[in-house]
Image 1: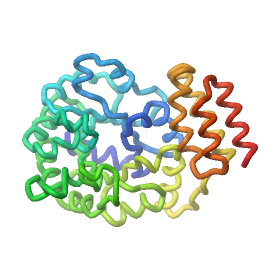
Image 2: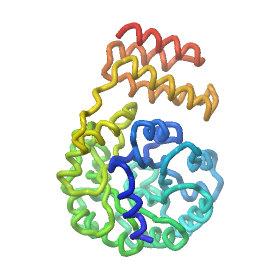
Image 3: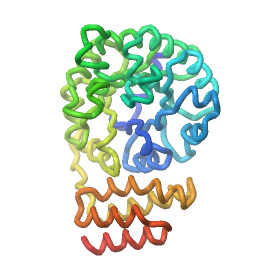
Length: 328
């Protein structure tokens, strides 16, 4: 099963993927990124235990719209039996493969022994991967970090050793974020840790961390030798980054930064799809954070954010967008 992911990833049109991001990589935004040549997207992080206990919102997170391209569902947890349940529960999902999160730094996740906490419990991490692999009819991959803490690096298993352990237990690919858990998203990502993992395993390695432009994405491939790049914060409000990176990699003319009119058109499409999927009340409110990223760096961005964040109806939202367009 581990080898089965290589031909699939090689068949994709580009090596630049949308990362799993809470509040961003829902079905709607995944589809929008795919419209801009993103060949593979990841779901928001899904609790395996939450699926077992039927927690509110869990089924929405695993939903994959029929118009979407390949999607990986990312699960998190710390109990092997919960991964067995989750994978079996999702046996009818159209997901391309399942990913296990062992990199999330959020305290409420870590304190439960989940996310990046598993990097300090190698045996438990291996058992979780093994359980998912045995239950799954498709590949299982894992996302990790450089480590847990620089201060305790001598006590913890190194990222390359940890990745080898996961590979030995059936992981079909390893994604690496070049920061420790304690660093969260501060400082600079250490891309050398991605290179070290790539040199340590035979399965595909996906790099992550500080990819904010097409140039960053291509440079990560060149500097680390990784097989693909997972774009997270650099893709918020910027689905164009995927087609830009693809063009740069292929030596084609790189599309320029979209002008304000294109940004407004993108927001309008996003809003339409959000309301279609979630209704006006929820869709409008979830669009607020998306819009703040779409408009970042443009003239009058602060003013438009204030208006969009207080819009109570789609009509008010659209009127604010029109004013933003007129100001450019």
